[in-house]
Length: 125
Image 1 (spheres, rainbow, N blue to C red):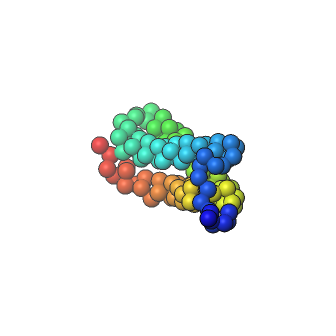
Image 2 (cartoon, rainbow, N blue to C red; image 1 turned 90 degrees about the horizontal axis):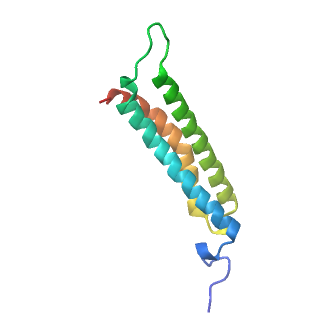
Image 3 (cartoon, one colour; image 1 turned 90 degrees about the vertical axis):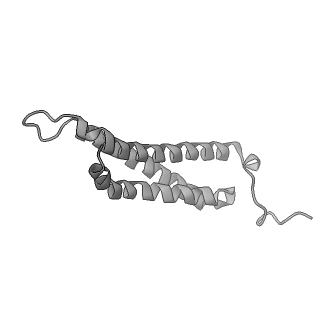
């Protein structure tokens, strides 16, 4: 006797093709968000101090690169959060846990970056 449809766990191969593509895209965005977070902190710790600032300039190339990496992180985290919200709202598709993971990572990545940024600068090698 099989479990009722509402209680039965949906396996990935049972989902529709569009939903599988959405999950794959979500995995890529999740990995990219975490990768950019690690890259931003590593850049601040290892490379930022070595890039020069021109005489009389208020900021240098390192500041512009850091801004670009930070904006990339914010955009990827926002995409991760939006995708997670969509998957949580469509929980009938069997992806509630993954949607929650995307929500947490999308919300926490910029906050972690802002919190760890000063510490990465202090630990500059």
